Amino acid sequence: MIRLDQRRILVTGAARGLGRELAAALAGMGAHVILADILEAEGHAAARDIGHGARFVAVDLSDLASIAALASDISGKEGALDGLVNNGAIATGVGGVAFDAVDPALFDRVMAVNVRGTWAMVSACLPLLEKGREARIVNVASDTALWGAPRLIAYVASKGAVIAMTRSLARELGPKHIGITCVAPGILKTWSTEYVPAERHELYETQRAVPGPQSPEDLVATFAFLLTPGALALTGQCLPVDAGFVFT
Image 1 (cartoon, rainbow, N blue to C red):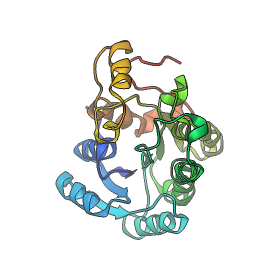
Image 2 (cartoon, helix red, strand yellow):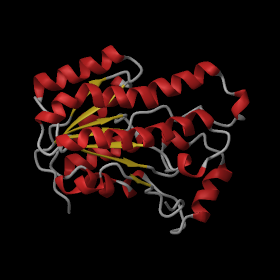
Image 3 (tube, one colour):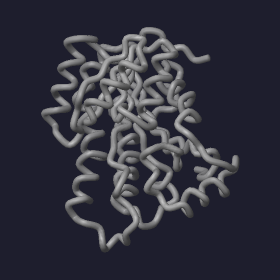
Image 4 (tube, rainbow, N blue to C red):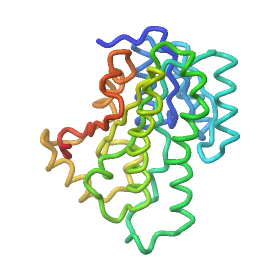
């Protein structure tokens, strides 16, 4: 089993779904986990349930001041970060219509949270990561950006941008020996995909190289490894961890 003893890891979008499962798994591997989310009540409950010293800090990824406050809070309490998982994103209620019928305000909101929010988190947390021990960053994208899922243009565009940013940041952060990678899951069995049409779920479950549904628990070992010192050689890479729905 991978151990992350005493590694200080921040997970955004951690109040529920993949983020919560990941935070719990990392804490079980010995990490000191900071959960961040806009959902305060659920975030505090998640931290209490996880235990192992996990704590919650509220953040709005569309608000630069909120992100700065999160970094300041961690600076005062943990002093540094050894890992950052940019999982927070808008994923529900953003699909199902043709690209030319998308509400421009929704498109802008998705970009503000999923793209600018990811960039802002890395920027705000960089001083903490520089103080950390062989710090690692994992951005969460989506395999929809790799195969071009239709009727989901804002989300697909935002996750494509996350993949591109990961590659650019790898070159800027490499000289600091900070590794950054990107995980691109497929559809998971979680609250955030309840709105996805049944035929899209069926497409994934039947066309994966390993057929069947995929849950957040299936991804945690990959994330755990990418947060270890040994993952530096993978910096800049995007890994479609989707049981073989997409090959790159």
